[in-house]
Image: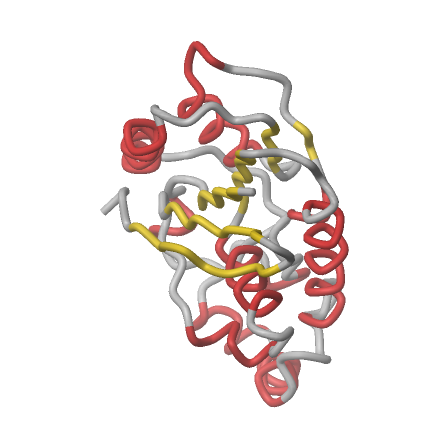
Amino acid sequence: MNIYFVRHGQTDENNNKYYYGKMDVCLNEKGLDQAEKAAIFLNHIRFDEVYISERKRTAETANIILGNNSKKFNVDKRINEINFGKFEGKSYENIKKLYPEEYDRWCSDWKNESPPGGESYVEFYSRIHGFMDDILKLNRENILIVTHGGVIRSVYSYILDENLDFFWKFASKNGDVTLVKYEYHNLYIDSITHVGI
């Protein structure tokens, strides 16, 4: 099985380096271009299943990738980006100023602490874990999953013996295409391609 992960194209919030996950925003001009480049990169593949998160930015990216070959998407809330709670839509500098104690607690125990009104990384990872367990049960040749940077980096942790510290060992740029293969009960990262730069 070939599982293609695509991080959605850039948004203004990405460009401004805001913390955001639950916010439902659209792609900006560069993000649309990144999705077009991903579409060109993937245009030779026939996808048996397509999964997206609940956010508009993944639907926009998936629609561009599939073009005239659009099919019904499986919308799965488990692959939504992490919910940053009251940190949503704010820069690092603003968060430090508005929520200094909460931010320090979150940074000191990033796995278990959560932003005010948000979710912890452990809670977030639990969603991804369940999603991946279900994907591996499918009998499909090619699956497309259009989702978010935090989700994709969590998938890498899932592959690498569920070591959550690997979350910080990979980048995930807007428009990136990652091919994960599942063969003979072995799951591995085959390639990570920066197509949207």
